[in-house]
Length: 158
Image (cartoon, rainbow, N blue to C red; front, side, top):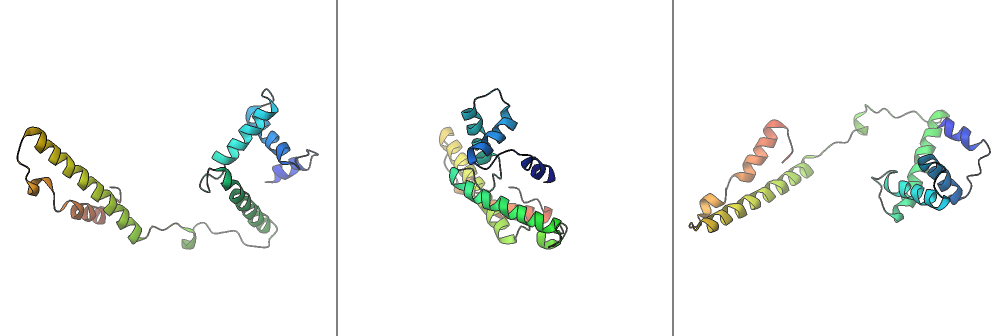
């Protein structure tokens, strides 16, 4: 962050939105393109590529601004000794998947596959002119086998 602060202090007037976007656009595209194209490209970068988990719409820019302010505040507070750095190995900082959402996603995936297999079996029977047998078309233990497999192996993909 230090180089960014030093560069901002070197007399570059980035106090307006357009000047800042033009600066970003120059860094991305160079000086060969027009100012309007550089500004538009920088705006697109901020919307689509900067913090896409917050959103990729025009309305998400305000949320991104607040989040960047929050991150800078925490970074400066840590560098000034006002707070301790986060321990990335602490269990509270880990993302933990709970059993409920995992089972719900697993059931949803298994059910979709069951419906797909059922439709395929019915369509094959109708195409071949065979009598539809519900016992063979509908596999009763399909979802149960899927859940048992995931519980036994720890592989929660469908």
